[in-house]
Length: 249
Ligand SMILES: C[S@@+](CC[C@H](N)C(=O)[O-])C[C@H]1O[C@@H](n2cnc3c(N)ncnc32)[C@H](O)[C@@H]1O
Image (cartoon, rainbow, N blue to C red):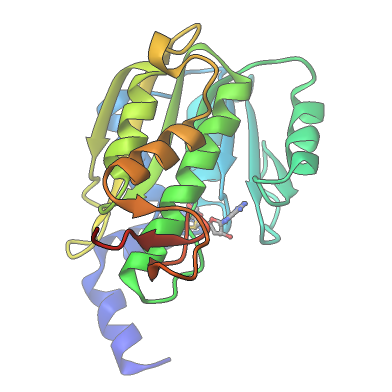
């Protein structure tokens, strides 16, 4: 193990605690802190954990919802079984993954959709932030298809272009939307969580018939970021498939 890894590990209390309590990832403490603040998960809840690998949030979800609850985890990567949950390996953007989740739900509606979804980081902040925005927005749309009225949605977001569009789309679908940065998110990180509570029975008027995805696309266009693939325009980030800054007129 490298000296740097060893030093970071020693300095990181969440990593140490996670290891000693048997959690698979330090991120388990992020969900615990979200739960302490908002009490989103209740006993017997039906929960979807999107981007669940290696399973830290799934472990916490099973603890919080108890033996009568249902927890489904989904990730691109293969995840070792977590007792008390069902794990699906699949891409949340694909219909066959949604079909498999619905099969497991067997007619039940979800009470909580948790999403710690994150792209494989490239190290280029703009790119990573844009792809993360796209994943979170897509997950919000997935959640809207399966979440019971009154239900809750949490997603990881990275500060940057387009976030306000996602927040507006969330506010059109939930009565209460807040940003929250758990202590367990690293100090230097621009990562935060969007906590959305009390899903409305139907979206507010201006969002009726629109997906969150198209609302965020519209917002990006309004703030001068072009989401179309256009070679003429200067590309600034790839993500939300491909974003380019409009040329000055
Ligand atoms: C930060 S990790 C999640 C950690 C997890 N919450 C835990 O506590 O163990 C983010 C995960 O999102 C997953 N992911 C990214 N894109 C995805 C997609 N399209 N569908 C499903 N999972 C995805 C990644 O494979 C990665 O495992």
